[in-house]
Amino acid sequence: MDQDAFIKHAKAQLDAWNAELQKMQERMEKATADGKTQIKAQIAAFEAQRGQAEKTLEKLGQANAAAWDDMQGGIQTAWTALEKSFADARKRYET
Image 1 (cartoon, rainbow, N blue to C red):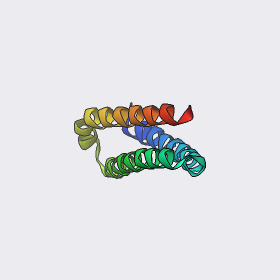
Image 2 (cartoon, one colour):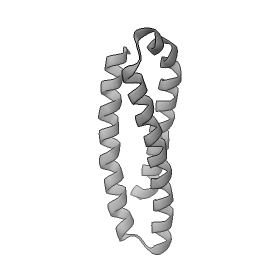
Image 3 (tube, rainbow, N blue to C red):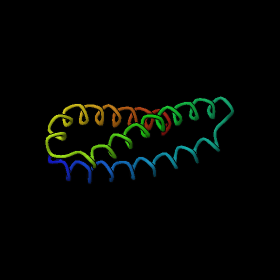
Image 4 (cartoon, one colour):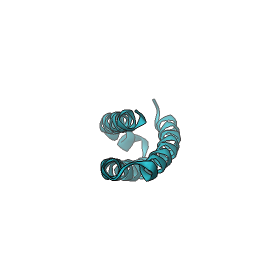
């Protein structure tokens, strides 16, 4: 995937995750005290990861073609880990 396509895909995914996080926060409001604590911890952890992804995406947007070639493997690996983390969190709280 080229740099522009990756950035476009990543931005769309961040938007989708933001919408999902909103749903998780709404579920948290309806949860028991123990449930709220668990959901809140997961949301905080994911928000921290998402923040890192946003910073990386910003740097990537400023990178030239040579830097993209150097960064591509690491960024895609990190993005895949973030996707898995979010999917795992979603599975825990959709039941």
